[in-house]
Image (tube, rainbow, N blue to C red; front, side):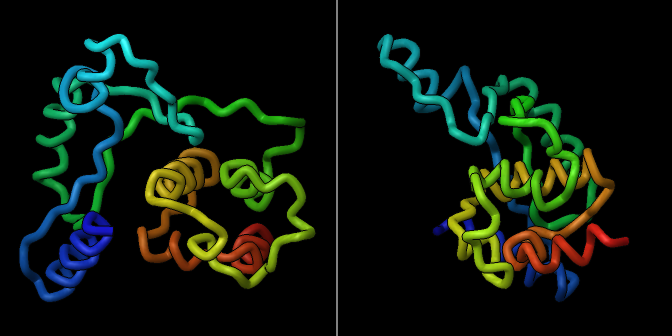
Length: 158
């Protein structure tokens, strides 16, 4: 929750022409809790959205890029390729439903936002990156939060 608030503060500052940068870091394997768990031979449960670990040196490389760009909220995560449960995950709706682990889209309200359907910040990043990489669709963090399957259906028609 605190990270989300910080991101909104940075977005507001950017709207007002002030500096602000929030970085959504993914799992970092050689520092922090992940490294501590590995040192203590504890089992590390991987994130269900397929976020791989990154090194602190790769984070620092990304930080240099982030500091010279103009967006108020950015992310640095290594997203694993997700195996499709069946063929045909080439449409916007099927792709987003797959990421959200929705098995049958017929039982989902078309006008509920993805946030209302249980999308957390890690899943939002995966959706954002997938839409950019696979469909050349570029949306802000706010637009991703407010995205619905009805909006995806309209986007798919163009």
